[in-house]
Length: 112
Image (tube, rainbow, N blue to C red; front, top):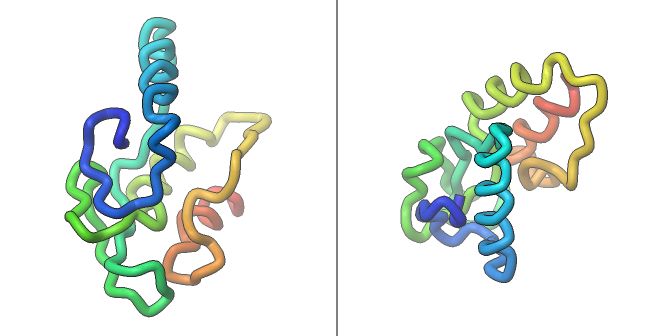
């Protein structure tokens, strides 16, 4: 999302890889391939299971808040997108699955 120029609030971002993400998105675009990014995100005002949370559009993460999971719309879109795949390789969870309020995106996809 940051590579697309969107505000990510205080979300964890590996800034060293933003240019890499831009290059991957450009290459995918040139090849006519889709990269599915979340359309909505569960954000929190702290990295804590009892933090204040809200669901916002991916392009509307408030300053001072961090994205910690996919929103329900994103999870449904990803399930649809992946529904006819025979193999899916994931590089880690979609959310902070160790904290219940931020585990629904990961388990929503894993338990398809």
